[in-house]
Length: 87
Image (tube, rainbow, N blue to C red; front, side):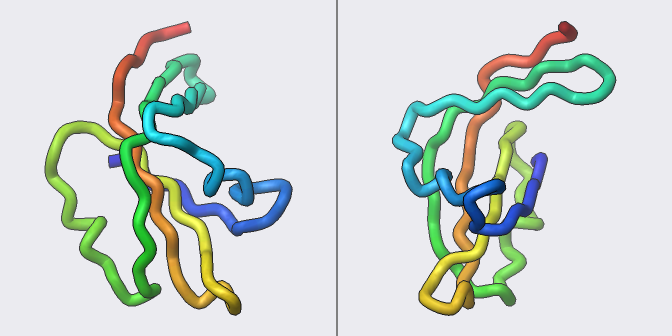
């Protein structure tokens, strides 16, 4: 699992809420690998919920940001890996 956290701010992850199932994201690493993921689901949880860190299935990407009136919750967006390659 690849896990990335970012604030729910205009410059960072504020547009995540506009994703629809099937949307794709591409991450390119410094060592020239490109990973393509497909958005599958999202859910809201509390900051004490660490269950996602016990994940042991196929490769996924999880993006986490804050949510709620006072940003008291955590919203997680899950993506399945559909392709990776050297660029």
